[in-house]
Image (cartoon, rainbow, N blue to C red; front, top):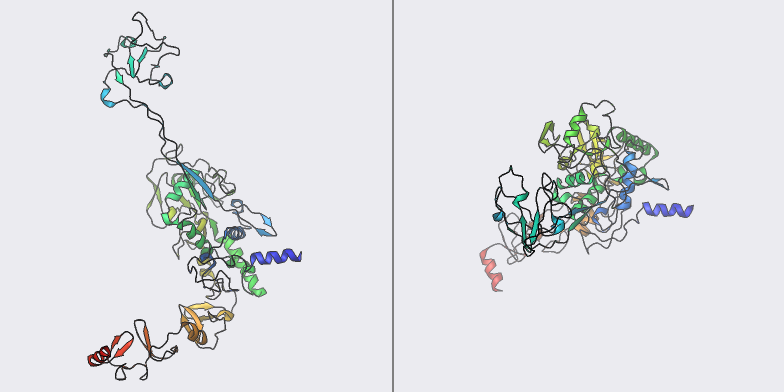
Length: 542
């Protein structure tokens, strides 16, 4: 039992991704080493999402935990392993067939004579039925010009015509045409050589996430409406974008007290109440629907929603099931199909439906995003289903609804509680400090380099991070070009390009005559200061 607890601790702790290379810093980072409370790498200060860490398992656990004990539990594959809920991401591989070229024997357009009856029979099995049953009856004889003239061939009753063929020709007898129809002259048509069929080409595309509970064609059309650089295709920038947004928009320390740093019992209780509140009032998953179906169902919506809701609360949803195993086909969603399929209407504006964000009209047959929390009168274009604060696509269509707007998890949290700029956690304590335009836990207003507490100490803001004076002098301070000593943060200095000097007579002076240049005009030449052209000539001559 103790060993299992220790393994669990390691799995959830700071060994995840240990040693992974940083995708931003490359060789400058020695490998990922998670800071014990800052949620960043100790070596390069980048986040875990910037390192080559496989986070799929951790992401699935995080999303499973997020939707545990909610009305959306049916949409996730929730498993209980050591008490940890899990979620299996809806990774889908879609096969897109290219235009298939089959064996065909085209007939030149110039050889067609209006009013004549013609067929092309390059082979016995290639004859096609014509209206009125005008095909040769099974077993009808084939007439060849080389055969004896006395041989006669008669079409079977109801066949309407007699077929005759010769090498490279197809002949239709005019005697097979009813007398009431004007008879055209017998026409000989040149039959081109059959073209060999090309091998069918199938393009396979793997999406690391796709909308669950809809048919594959609708899901694919949804993806096509996203910006190309945001489509989560495996191995592309879109997949990297999704990975980073999963970490940024849904921080696990916003929902799980065990992921936070040293919360008091009172803070744990407040956090649990906060989590329960957003699960009951704000959290939701977007659904894909068609505007015309939404219009049919909107009038039926009551307090409990329209009839026939699937697991995601979407009108017309049939079997949504779970997102399924990787590579599984997407479940079919009721009557919703691809544009032009049975039950859908041609593309065009739909009634009074317009996108809740861009206000442009929705089109029939085009997939739209529906958020149950927002009500049945609101739809979004796929590319418009974004956070109100950061305007980023809501990762996996997970949203938080508040005061008529969509938020990602992070910015919903920011609207409810102050967030510590040191540990990135929401602050549930009544006491915290504000400095440099940010909020901080009292114990987390520390030097970004050495973690010493800065309360009552001198510090310097370096890249928007507080740094103590010793660390600043050691790591960040620039050196004076004259005396080669680091320049203190409170000291006055003069900078010119990449050169810096103490703003003092002994440092900022002419390199030729030692004249103090503080407040004077000067010239710079290869790091040297010169007060006049005469001094410049002397330096150049020496």
